[in-house]
Length: 105
Image 1 (cartoon, rainbow, N blue to C red):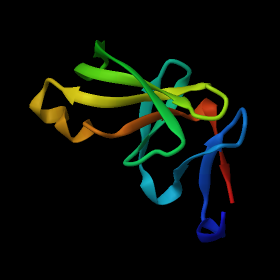
Image 2: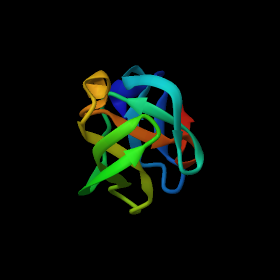
Image 3: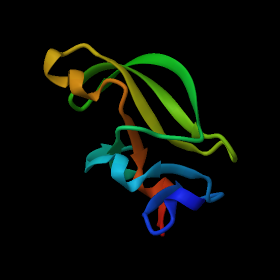
Image 4: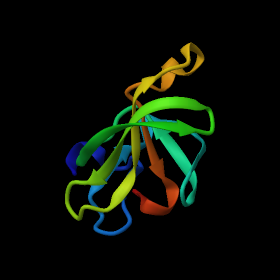
C-alpha cells in the first residue's frame, strides 16, 4: 500500500480489495439499486461485465456492470456510451454503490 499511506481509499466492503482512490471521486450524488452511489473517474481491481443498453433515470446508455476482481461482488457499473450529448461526460466513468464499499485510511 506504500504510496497510498495517509490517503483515503475505497475498498470492497466484502473483501477489502482496493477499488478506488479518494482523489478519483468525482461525485457523491448518484443513485443506484441499493441507494446512494459515487462516481469515480478511475477504478481498479475490477472486472467489467458484458455491455448492455439500458434506460436509466437520466437517459439511455450503454453500460457494463463492474465486479470486484477478488471476491466477484457486483460493485456498480461503468458508462460505456451516453446517447444524450448532455450526458457524454459520464462516458468512461464508474458508478460504485456506497453500500458495497468502505472508506479506509
